Image 1 (spheres, rainbow over the protein chains, first blue to last red):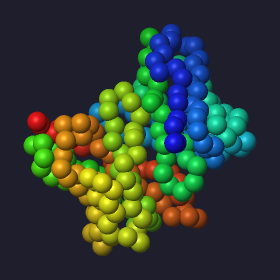
Image 2: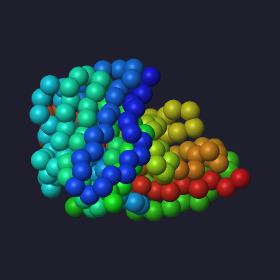
Image 3: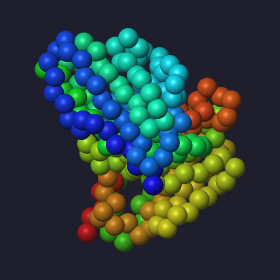
Image 4: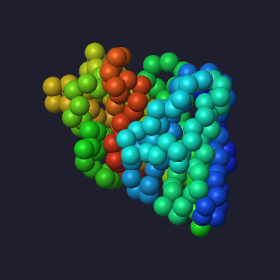
Length: 114
Length: 116
């Protein structure tokens, strides 16, 4: 149990366009979902925390107008990178938690902005 | 400010031997600790966790030890297998009511290579 999927797994977009990444908990209801990004050979950095039906809480330094998060249901959260630029190229990973501290991660989305 | 640190970027171990991965933390509000395994271009996979009220938790070949006074935890893998080769991240979370409750702070990761 505790499977999380992400779609797409890879996306290439042109600078200035927007990209939406979906995160779904397949076999559990995720009361909270988290979005991370990981740069090459670095750790996972938490971007934002989202609870179903409420606004996301962003970590310091993360632009909320650039990284739009919607947590429409207990099984779906989306991250939209608006007006993407090459420096937004990264590996984006979501996670869901059903209770307690354990987070279950999706497989990640590789975003490349050209 | 790196609150969770894995000071060894890499570790190489012979198959069948013990792998010991270390992690230190600075935030005394952390009260739950987790280890994740990660392959390139994939999301982390949960391995094992430990609450601050314990000093040891065991699950099969994996054992996590917590030394609260030293703010140190370690993951032992015995016996190590080539399939264990991956990046291992330790992560920490705060207690209920705190600002870091439910959020995970990750270390930098340690690349474990198990040689046949």
